[in-house]
Structures are given as C-alpha cells and as structure tokens.
Image 1 (spheres, rainbow, N blue to C red):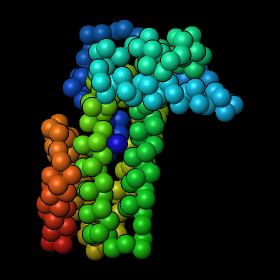
Image 2 (image 1 turned 180 degrees about the horizontal axis):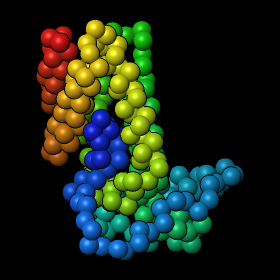
Image 3 (image 1 turned 90 degrees about the vertical axis):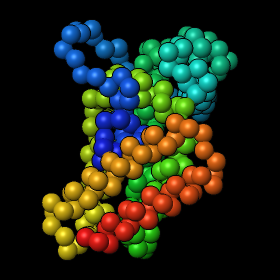
Image 4 (image 1 turned 45 degrees about the horizontal axis):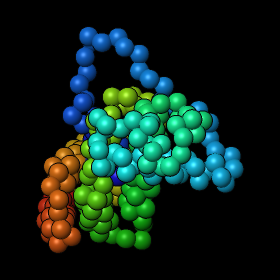
Length: 234
C-alpha cells in the first residue's frame, strides 16, 4: 500500500507514485519508454479470472524474485498460462508492473478515504488508525513494494500517478482543516507535510526488516503518540 510525499514520488509509502532507488532524473538518455497501458479490459468472467491469475502470479514473482528477474515468461509459468495469453491483455512486463502499481494506488486511496473521512471518529483517533494501518501494510507488502519502487521510472509521471497524488493531497488537506480548524493555512500545510512525509519515510525504513506484530504495534503506537502530541500543541 503506499502513502505519501503527501503522496510523494516514492510509492507505498502513502506514497503513491513510486520512485525508490531508481528515482534519478537525468538528461542523458533519450530511450523511449515502453508502453504501459493494458491492451484491453476483460469483458467476460473467464477473461476476468485469467487477468486476476496473471496479476496474482506477477505479485508472487515480484515478491520471490524481485524486479530484475521479473519477465513475462516467468509470470506465465507461475500462472500456468501461455505467454500468448498474457499478451492478449499486457503488451510487455512494464504494463503488468504498471497495473499492479495502479491497483495499489487505488487500494491506498480507499484506505485514506475510509479512515480520514470518517466524520464519526475524532480526528486524533483517525490519525492513530491511519498510522497503524499504514505500518502494517508497509511491513506486509515490503517485498512487492520494493520491487515496484525499482520499476517506478516507468510510470512516475503517468496520468494515473498524477491523479493518485492529487486525490491523496486533497484528502490530507481536508483532514488537516478538521484537525486544526483555527490554524492558518500555512500552519496546516506544514503540519500535513511533516506528519505524512515522516510517516512515509519512517514506514519505508521500518519495513525493510521483518517485524513481528508486537513490534509493528509498539512502533505504530509511539509514532501515533508523537503525531497526536504535535497536533495538540499547535
């Protein structure tokens, strides 16, 4: 799941678009990027099941072997289908990675919305719930997230990435207005940047080591306490 440079260019972090270790802007290369859009959308139940099997196999290959060994042939083998079947829907491996990333962005957006827009829950409790949900997700999906980050240059500037960033920023801004109704716009923006950028960065680092459920809870509690105390002091 990713969260944020406020949904930053790093990816799961609620961090939507990703960049990870390969995020380097250069002016030396003029190579054309591969096509990342799917060829067609499944229209029938059987086709939908095939695409779901391909994406599940792709997730397993990423988690087990990483992006450097990720190929269409390996995905086909893992899914138990022919390479030709994959090419009906995905023109290359980049398009498969892109689809996985878009699905993750959508999942993260839903998580943000369900937690941050829950008007029946006090804002500090919402923030605490978000910290716990995010850290759990970071640790559970660390292998796949890391592989998607490596492939980030393929889709960092796509319309889907820009949309994900915009939607995430809007939800975060609306939450900060509720959390700090008397603060100035500049203060709310600063607070939002500090909280969500810190959550993203620390979550990424924390999840690089395998963690127990108890460790995740203790870390999330400590981070949530810090964020809540910061908001209460403003």
